[in-house]
Image: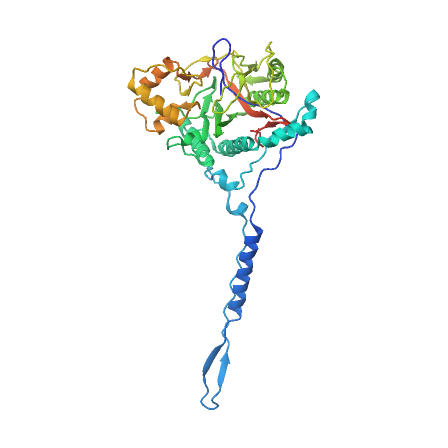
Length: 458
């Protein structure tokens, strides 16, 4: 997701990190041994009863008057093989199995935990800080739930997205997966506020760095030579996990992707309690601009897109009040305990500066939206629907189509001009350039920094 810079430009949000501590193993389903053993014992008893079938009397022998005993033996039934919940409940392809079924105990995989350094190293063993960590357990599980949804959906997408697909098809596959895995399809009023999409699926191509998702009727097809930024958010109870990656199908762009990934990880490494924003920006820029890309016989430096930043995240709002720059500067604002940040970086072979361009698709109701009279009836109707279904969560025009709204553009533009809804148009560098993005969400817990969105992929 993007954030506004001081010069008024919109900026996207992203989040990077590098492992210092090995992430804890994910939760797994467990069978009840008692129930399983009882079932097996009952079946063993039944097998023995079948084998020792009751004796049947033969007809009386007319010569002796006695009866002969004849045994009838029944064929033994094969014993049923025990199966564990892990074997019977697996994620489907495409992912559609709700995580509450895969993790019935409600304990989700922990992100990458990184110890604080220097003057904050005491936090790992401090009884006070460990107590604060424990009382935040519900909050943490909601974040970990959303993060696991993001991992499973994006890893499926990375394996299955191919040139030749339409951007609409790609976006809807990702969003259908998120809704299914959170268990909130978002069609009933208020359901999307409980869980689902925390940020619309951005599929920005080439010189477009952020905030593009196809509107209805868009027929853009992904090409082999495209560089596509995939940026989407997942939320559970308003706890937003914002994470992004870049896909390219030509090794020509490998260094560009590596630059953005390395820069994001540098930002995640540097981030922490009491760290200045300026120090994080300097670390990101140093990593990003150490790369070059050879395109068309030219060696092009990779530049940070200086007017795009990371940002803090608060409940139900993907943009808080703090920005995380990706270039060095003089911002002395510090990160604080308990804050959530999206560390995202953007690299470009162009000017390293983006402007609004193309048709807008992303919107969000402002947290401090003014209470102003709306003279257009369609604007009033649309605002009511936005408030009940999205609140202050970002949404796109396809989501309004999905809820059955028609001919709403006049009302939507009225809400934007009235200052109630913010429009986030696509952000683009110079045409002919290529951009890349990686992003992670980090939690500044009292004891450790948790890179909540970290996965085996990035």
